[in-house]
Image 1 (cartoon, helix red, strand yellow):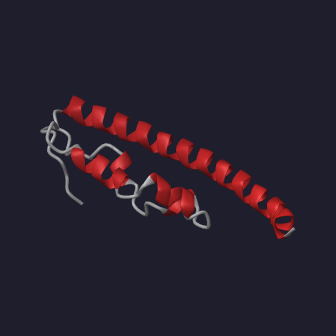
Image 2 (cartoon, helix red, strand yellow):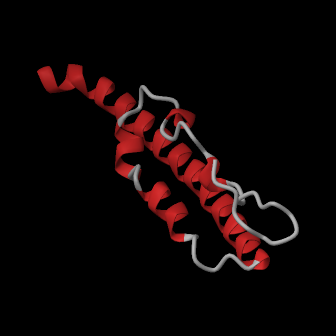
Image 3 (tube, helix red, strand yellow):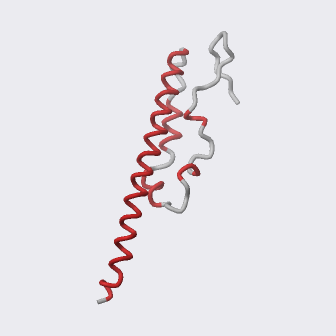
Length: 99
């Protein structure tokens, strides 16, 4: 009999986790697209060596961690989102400016 009382709460939890799963998927896809664009722009500028750090920073936060920590907003997992932007250059020589 206790199971019948808990069933609605479990169902609501399952639906909530399905919604969270979809939001995490869409958010990670958006970041993945931005990283791809940033890497393409780096390659167009001739920077063929320094692109792996973008994926390393992206992989630092796992998909499961984002789904299970449902109390945290999706934007709060990466404080610094500079890995999604192309690296600045000093114009003429395409030298990366470290900040």
